Length: 76
Image 1 (cartoon, one colour):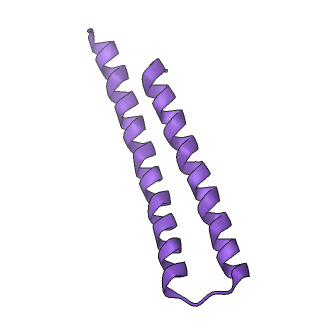
Image 2 (cartoon, rainbow, N blue to C red; image 1 turned 90 degrees about the vertical axis):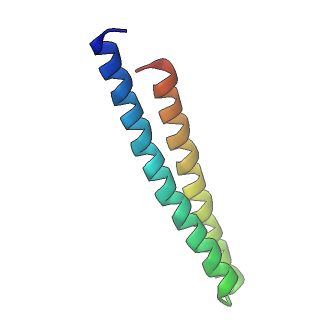
């Protein structure tokens, strides 16, 4: 491997790590919301609202993971 290839690989790894950091933030938000539901008395409407937010965050996590894996696997 020449230097350009190594630099490209390093940049891809840095990108993946940034995506993993974003994923971690979203997972922590999901956990906090789940704990909130567990610890606090809530009506069905409040629980549904939180569940929708958790589902939205889960979709974002999946999209970030997929996008960054594609970038790594294709070397784009």
